[in-house]
Image (tube, rainbow, N blue to C red; front, top):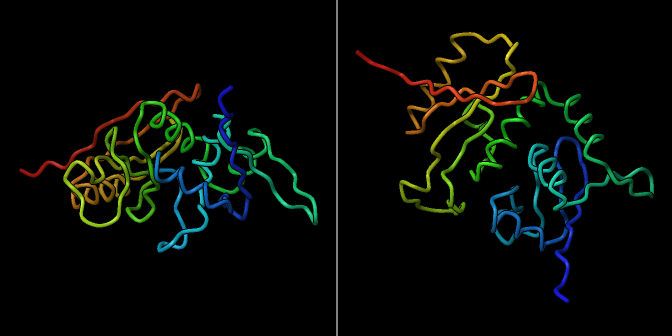
Length: 190
């Protein structure tokens, strides 16, 4: 009988999930989930809430929170409720994250670029150091709910930023059924 796949365990700490088992670093190495820490000789991995929820939904991890001396396991619904209350527009972000992952893309946070996500082409593995053109961010994606208001300067800033890093800006609009429609937004100079 083949061995069962090990279900990794993570602890909810503030707005992230920390996986203390060094074997969890394989999530990063194999599929690009999380951030290994420390950078040199990592011994743990930190997941953003979008990543943690997705892996929890797929049955790849378990998540707990410590209450005094007890570990309380969190179900998907409870972690989603926590994330929605902790992060503005989280449901829209999760819908986009999930959609992109289901399509086979590598998705990382885009906070340093002022957007929700940076997305790499299918088959790209994250690595440190010099990258080939294919290994760079292909798209930056901003998630907005269909009924949300946004400013044109916000959109313009995102497009300029994408242009500066040689990526394409995608505006992801999520409807009430959590379906995602992507709009390519480009800068045109006369």
